[in-house]
Length: 358
Image 1 (cartoon, helix red, strand yellow):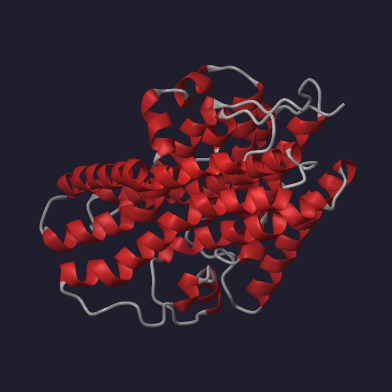
Image 2: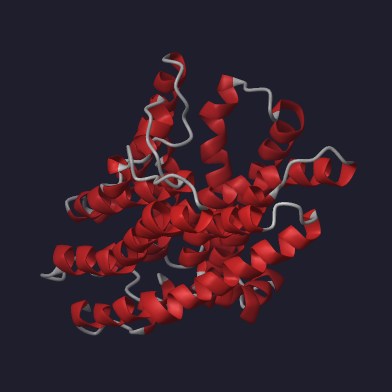
């Protein structure tokens, strides 16, 4: 029996906030050789997986919306217009700031040369194939998500509900083979859409599971334990050694771990739900897009103006400035575009659902 109830999960706002903080922590680590920095840097490697958490959340939230409105006659137009209103304004504002406003402030040369791939969401291509391009390097993940938003609604629309798991399984296998091919050709696997899209597909599977199932049958605690049992030894014994086989298998394992976390929050109630419903994490989730977009720019500006500050002053200032800029971005800029999305709502849509993906 199909589950047509599209609930709003406050916990996922908090989880998105956690993902943003993980990425900030990963990008924060300064140079240095003392023991504290050494261990912080080793732990901060996990922060990089915050991007995978973003992908799993995106796959889950976007797919559950698509499954819910699949029979709506404005399925495609409503989806693409609302995604454009959410993503494009801040993205292109950030590019204008990066290319045309930051250089004069820092008295550095103009930086808009070789930037055309960033303007059309192809910035993960040069990162993969060693092509020269100039722009915010962390925007590669925004390109991956934009590519997902382009093709995934088409696939969901033209795939029957019973065949959706096979579609998801096919995407996972294609990503695995793509990583094998890229490694064979001596290219990286981390930035390319087709080599990392299995994280989005694994999140999508959880959306299908919620949409189709009755009482939960998956054991999310077991999924978390098995994933951790594979992840931790890999981190301890192979981390930083560049083993190619690790690159091939680690992405779906990490994605499964985060799918387990999302599933535990969605289908259960525990102390984790309480933590993720905290006001701080929910607020962080609300401004997470701005946090992700602007935090490296905040770090760059602060380091150029105050190059000799201690690590701890830098950390507090970097985090505080990032929150201030992201908060200003959300309330003074992003929110005005988000309000326009109400004109593209399907009939009987629960208004709270739009908050889930802001």
